[in-house]
Length: 276
Length: 232
Image 1: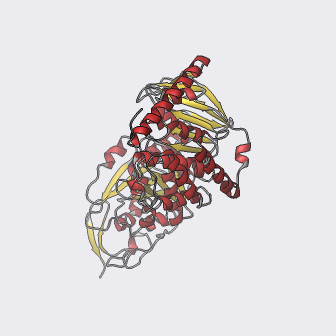
Image 2: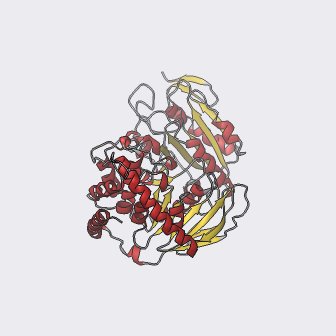
Image 3: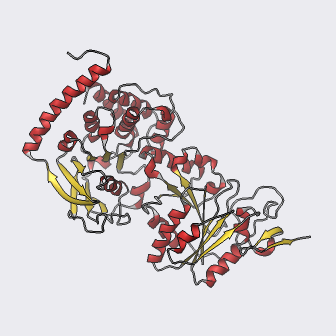
């Protein structure tokens, strides 16, 4: 995390400490269990159960149309065998109560989805204040969200602008910061952050925070290898779980260096400078 | 007999949400019958017929569609009973936002499309404010934050309602709706409307709340299309 990002997060923590009524939510152990269902042809998932503990970043990989977003949706809505996949999601080994499924104030899951189009005809600041209210948080957190979002994206977001005029990168940055600050749920689901036009690794580290479960759908080798395990999807089914090996971890370190170099080149070009 | 009235703006997903809920009700061993009310034209009945449940269509034509639905409640209930049903599901035309075609003892369900933006819960009026359940559809097309803001707006308009996030394509939320329908009490005695109708020239428009057929005057259209004038 950059220095500026962590400074803002520290300020956020101060505000959050005064407003959160359920800090103990983070103190308790948490596990997320996916019980297998069926693929698109009704054949049982090869992976019949996977348990994810607090603090793990887990990837979901597979070709387009292989069911990655469906699996994310199953987790987001705490499927009870009532979705087309027939999968079940358990929290701490039990079926979560329906309040946890729907009431945003109790929601355990925050989601950064592929759908980043804002349809709301509201200003950025009004929208964020209302979102904070819906989550039972202090509406003043809205300003922190914008500050944080502006560390992740090139062109700064103006609080008074309408949501509908934000660029793709600005929308993603705003959503990422919103999840880190306002949603602040112990489980974070991320669908394809690499298409975002934002600083992806910084965004993932920010979202992972302390002791969260992060599930990330990705085609990006760096993000996939940042995860400790990855679920492989095919034809709508979960076919296997791969643990990131020592060798893969070394590859990750190399990619990280290359990515850092590419990012700095991109920034040089963006700023209208000449690559040395 | 239980009565469920499903209202909501056109295209909000009423039929798709109901289709999934009907499947859940059938799985639970219940016998739903369905009446689709529309104004000029509908083909929703052909979709419902695929579920092998009794389906009837009522077209209101020149009568106000909400008044038409209310005026024909007795006939719809009788028809459902004749079909051996224990639940009457009435999907309304969902056109006018001035009225709400909800009798007090029926389960009132308002289907509302998230993509219409966070101001729409405030615009929908009595259709939402007097409903027992608000079913949010198309949530998969927007971000989680937007869904949560929308939910907050629904609660501003109707703090007492139960909110179900549903998806007409995947069937998400239908099990929750079916469970609510199952636990809703049977109707009994005389029913009155939850919300006063507008001032105009028909008996409903002049403020009649009682549902029974004999309470109504003016140009009236029956379920089978027969029209009559009743009054002085």
